[in-house]
Length: 254
Image (cartoon, rainbow, N blue to C red):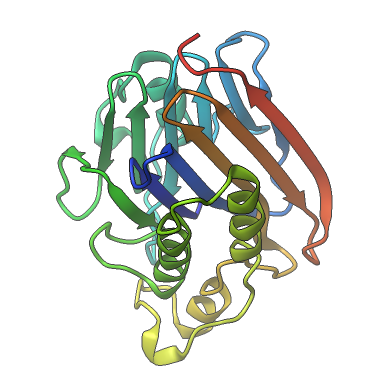
């Protein structure tokens, strides 16, 4: 997962609204979002290589998502970052030490307990309890907003500023925002150590390069009564939708 917009108790009707793009190498095997056979509580896509996930939700009202932390020379570690999300969904928090993973940003929430946390193993972060609001998270420091992070955060914030916005209208607008392909000006791009050509390629909200790009978009909406909407859309290399999967949970915590 490489771009996430989060509305956390930012609207009278909605406890959680998430709009997220997963960017990954095209060749990496991936399974569509579904309830997992061995963990029937979990609704999530799945990494076909190491078995973890980038974003998921449970019937018990837990949510979690992870992004990698972009570095010029990525560190190698023994554990898959997708396992962090699984830990949070099953156990409510990460289970292992930060140094066991390559660089990551992690969000997790409990919709029953009304708590959301951020943590990272870069930039000296310790676990932060998030207050209600609208946030964006990508592959850099949580408090340093990149252009594409500002784009999805701003769009989500504007939508949640509409008192009578419906779930259907939210979905249409957020999936549209997640498809934005324009690159941002060079002077606005971060310097994460990968070089300007790669910064340009990675700068759009939706990345459509041949070998690496946006593989799927996900919108999650949980209203204050616990009603849940979850939709995943997957894309081929040119950015055409190749699969739409709809999943509904009647009520979180049920």
